[in-house]
Image (cartoon, rainbow, N blue to C red; front, side, top):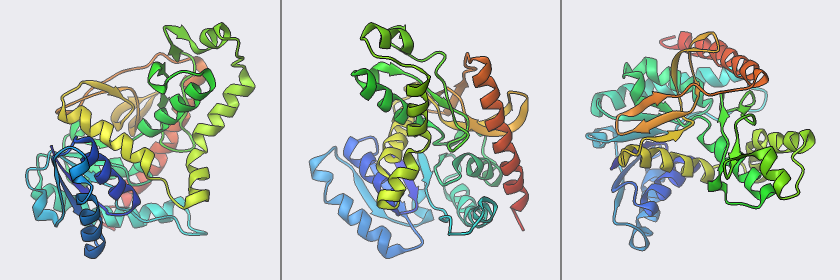
Length: 314
C-alpha cells in the first residue's frame, strides 16, 4: 500500500512511523509546507525501517502522490487563545483549499482520510473540494474515541480491550455519544459482566468513564501539548482495513444523507470499511436517550459544517 501523508507534525509523523513499523504501508510519502521538517522526519523514520517490515519513506511533493492508495490529511491550524471555533474553521478551510485540489490533481483515484480538526467538519469540506464519491472521503471520526472507551472499560473490568465491544458515535469531540445500551463483553452486557465479577457498573462509574473518554484529549494536551500516538494507531487500523480488504466495522466519519432526521452531515456511525473505502453504513440499535444525544450531535455538526462549506472560495 502506498500512503501519502499531508502534514509532518506530531500526528502525521506518528502515523507515518506506525504505518511503516506495522508494515501496513510499503511506501509513505510525507509532505509538509516545511520541507526540512518533512525530510528530517522521513529520515528519522527510515532509520527504524530495518527493525520492522520492509518499506520506504521519503519527503516529497504532491506530484509524488501519483498512484497513492490512500492520502491522509493531518495538516491544519491550531486553535489560538481567544480564537473561536469559527475562526479556526475559517483558517482550516483556507488550508484545505490549497491542499485538496492538489491531491485531486495528482491522485484522482485515491481514498482520502481526514484527521485535521474539527475532523467531521473538515471531512465535509474535503468532500466538497475534492468532488470525490462519498465512499472515498473518510474522516478518522470516533475510531480513537471508541478505542479510548474500550480501553477504560477493559481496565475496569480486568479484560483485554479487544474483548470489549462498545462504540462511540457522532462527533469526534464534545458531543460524541458513548453507546452503553448494546455494549458487551463475552456475550454479556457490560452490566451483566460487571455483576458476574463482583464489580459495580452503576451510573456514577459510567459517568466517570464517560468523562474519561470525552476529556482524555484535553488531559493529554494539558500534559504534553498534543495527542499523536492514539490517532496514529487509529489511522493505521483504517489503512489496514483498506489495504487488506478486511470489511472491518469501524466508527469512521463519512457523509450521510440523514442521521436522526438531520440531513447531509458527516459524523461517525458503525461502518464497514474495505478496499473501496466506505462499503456499508450500519444503523445502530440505540436507547431513546442515545438517539436524542446522537441527534444533538448531528445538529451540532450540521450547523458548523454548513458554515464551513459556505466559507469555501471566500
